[in-house]
Image (cartoon, rainbow, N blue to C red; front, side, top):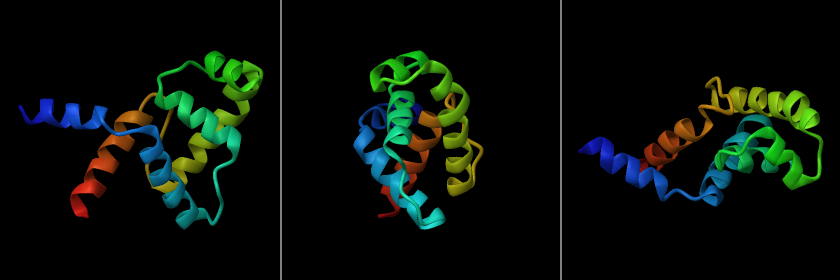
Length: 105
């Protein structure tokens, strides 16, 4: 039952809330902001989009997003959040992290 409750709570977390969390953690760890294209990739990944969909939405080539922006973003986020992140585990990790921070407040 608690897994079901946790799952339903996670679905209510908006991308804007996640973006605020990631941006503040990223700024605190690196002193830098996420770029617009990094936000695009993060948002697309959050929505479960494939790289070709993210690229089309932003007007970029799939190769650029998949082979340049994406890998660099996951590496930078992994360093900032002190957890190896990939596109596939992003949502699960951030949901968990966000819920933990909400409980601490």
